[in-house]
Length: 501
Ligand code: GAP
Image (cartoon, rainbow, N blue to C red; front, side):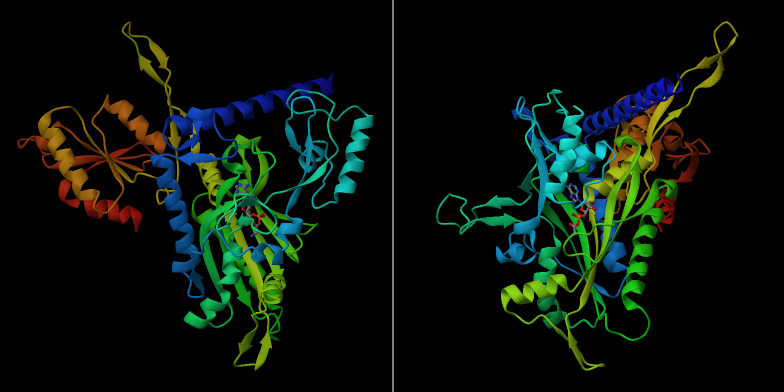
């Protein structure tokens, strides 16, 4: 009885989570944030496009990251390296040989599954395990008839095989084939470009250790499954920073100190931008990628992805793996000479790495609220009744909000519209603003709440009425409290500025 109850509860919860996921995905599409790519051709799995508000939100997220990682530090430099790099970059880094995931195929419906994820569904952690180990575990499930296709339920599945995540192109090739000799790879992570430009950064900017290089850019992975909306896609953007340091200093355990400092720094970034701390946790990797000597993830508990903790950002100790490999494969000495200690060595690297869309999804997941605004009213018969009402509101940190201020004339009266346009024109020189005159004022407030606009200025009849005490004033509505205050038109700019300072 009890176990039946738990099972039913779990099923209810799963359904609720799926509903929330579908609700947010369709909300983001209908409000111009995220569209599935190539929809008119039937779609392209694992690729998404960003509409007006999605683009603006992402731009603000990237600006926030750049501000924190570069502007507010004096030891990190910017870079924008090309997506295409010499083929040897990815042979040296170990990606060509080893950047793989285990894949199983359904022989009946041809659906592809990630074998390690399938095992995880049965509580078996297959992180970084060999293909032989994975197949042995899958065989145990086969014996119990538990191994079935996620899509059609067939048990006629292939063995797991190694599948390379590297995306290939024939850029610059004299033929259109993709042979070993003429293949070029699209970068699977942006940090490759940082290692290749480490020497030019030193030669041109002359930084002293420790210093970092940060960049934001596209990366491509032939992910086997891409079914969690923008959480895991085949084309995505990363924000990565590589911190180069001298591991041989004698004052304390520098490696651990830098690691701890960056862990705190990145954790605090999320708190500073309003992520609920109860939805964040650390995950320490026991099994490490070939390049890493220590690795932690900041995980976020995504309500819309089953209310479960999932990797948001990785913080890794990479030691001298990257510089030594690139030195070896390029034949160029990438060692650093430290003037003070007169030592020559390969700096160690620690990195912070996060996907832009994954971060956006965490911010949206954290901010998306459906608020009950039902209240008691007196109806036409003089009786107390409950008037049902609710609103969707995205309580984003205002620095991330796509639109900072909306300017609305209360009615379609020309003088109100002209005044509203005038204010909008002035404010939009400084802030991303929106002018909206369509529909009732209530609907327009809701529309702005939904896209997360923190301030709404309304120009009403009092604004234009010379005889009224409120002449030349407007109301400013706060998204979160929904309260309004009246201020002079003359002080709008300083009022808004004070909110963003
Ligand atoms: N340079 C190290 C590196 O790329 P990773 O753990 O493979 O490490 C780092 O990726 C971060 O990039 C992840 O924590 C995640 O935020 C993001 N990421 C990785 N694969 C992704 C994908 N297919 N779609 C979206 N984001 C992805």
